[in-house]
Amino acid sequence: MDPVIELEIPARAEYVGLARLVVSSLASGRRALPEERIDDLKLAVSEACTNAIEAHHEGDVEERVLVRCAEAEDRLEVSIQDRGKGFDPETLPEHPPVTDPERLNFERGLGIPLIRTLVDEVTFEPSSQGTAVRMVMYCDPALELDVDIDHIDHIDLTGLDEA
Amino acid sequence: MDPVIELEIPARAEYVGLARLVVSSLASGRRALPEERIDDLKLAVSEACTNAIEAHHEGDVEERVLVRCAEAEDRLEVSIQDRGKGFDPETLPEHPPVTDPERLNFERGLGIPLIRTLVDEVTFEPSSQGTAVRMVMYCDPALELDVDIDHIDHIDLTGLDEA
Amino acid sequence: MELGLDVEEKNGATVLAVRGEVDVYTAPRLREKLVELVSQGKYKIVVNLEGVDFLDSTGLGVLVGGLKRLRSHDGDLTLVCTQPRILKVFEITGLTKVFAIHDTVDDAVAG
Amino acid sequence: MELGLDVEEKNGATVLAVRGEVDVYTAPRLREKLVELVSQGKYKIVVNLEGVDFLDSTGLGVLVGGLKRLRSHDGDLTLVCTQPRILKVFEITGLTKVFAIHDTVDDAVAG
Ligand SMILES: Nc1ncnc2c1ncn2[C@@H]1O[C@H](COP(=O)(O)OP(=O)(O)O)[C@@H](O)[C@H]1O
Ligand SMILES: Nc1ncnc2c1ncn2[C@@H]1O[C@H](COP(=O)(O)OP(=O)(O)O)[C@@H](O)[C@H]1O
Image (cartoon, rainbow over all chains, first blue to last red):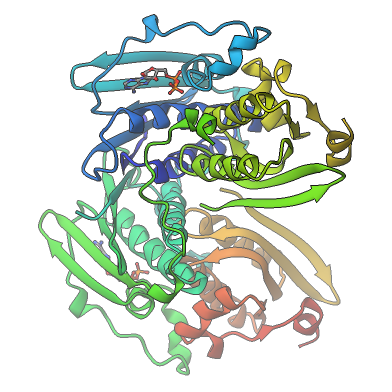
């Protein structure tokens, strides 16, 4: 099984920054994701968490959003799950082209297009229980750390004597 | 109910830094904890997570450690739960005084004394299911932020028109 | 998480320097500041994003709202931004065609 | 999380500059480096902690182990540290009485 890290936050705006921090910290631990792609993932996570939070009732701290990260060899998977009312990602309104003066009337609706552009794969899984947004970033194995110390989990601090 | 943030990590050394990051980020969001006390909490969390991880079998990613933070008005509570074999915190060996040359034989056993010194309250709750270490830091309300924007959870981005 | 907002008058323009992360939590403060400036009759606003570490679509929405409001007063909202990671958000969303984005505050004030 | 470990010879002492966070994950690398230096016959080691952002009891344990090892070779392990947050960890644990802690590398090398 791949290592899984879960962060569960109240559905409140103040915790979106924490979700970004956790994901970007995990992503930078994996040296196989270049900095620019970490920024992309961070932005996508911010968009998905913002939507997840807005899908809930305001301010009720018992409403929760779950950020789940799975670190596989070749990819980092992040899923954002809410317990909101769900939605159909295929029937979102289209924006007028940016050159159209009407464009200025659309201050919103940029989140999902951004997510689609930024991550390598995304699936929206809405249901009556809420929505899960699953995002995948593929890693570049050429960037992998030379030294693999992941397997040193137990350290024997007395060993200096045997030096 | 107080807002609760949960981080669940595999019981592996590489994730202790993430636990520190989450707790210190939450603690600095609460302006009522001065920087020095945030460092204290960070260190205590590191010690407790290190013990929690060492209480598990090495390297098995399905063994989990739960870091649970509750943000009350006057305090921040952090509990670290493992599913290890438990232990009796009252019967730990005593260290020789630091002036004793024998002291150098004790490279370990500093974690729990550190936790006791660093946080305002700590309880160890060992059981056959594992151990929960509950730590409390009290906040200094005099340091509280003037502006309370915690309640702005829904933002109306179209409102600029009404300016 | 703090959002820094510093206002300075410069050659007839109002320069709003933003520092920190602009997201769903902090964007309301940026929006309030823009509302306040407009209500004070400041119709030429330069938003300096050089100190911004992070900006998502909520922040973009506030800037678009500000631009729209200022245009309705025959004013303008222009940006200062050279950081690739922030510029990228404007590029992907096509908003580089909507906003005048300058390299320096002086250029923005002159422009 | 990276741990920076740079070794430099200075007036008969070996200076090991540590950068980053020393915890249960990274401490093994510090320990290995000390083991390596001792096995190369370096018995006067100065560990420069000025670049360390975080140090917990696992890191202390490695330093205590190193000191013990060096003393058994009639050598010494001394520290350079002026950061209050790091010094505090030595103070609380009483290890300020065990280690010679200097303000600068030069002092440590001379001492
Ligand atoms: N997790 C979600 N739960 C329910 N509705 C959602 C969710 N995510 C997106 N939506 C819907 O899709 C719309 C478009 O989302 P997005 O492109 O992020 O723009 P914005 O959030 O600015 O409106 C939202 O306004 C909302 O109605
Ligand atoms: N969560 C835990 N589960 C099981 N045993 C524990 C736990 N925390 C501490 N212990 C026991 O208490 C001992 C002392 O812990 P500590 O003071 O942190 O020093 P160290 O971890 O360096 O030995 C540990 O060696 C371990 O046997």
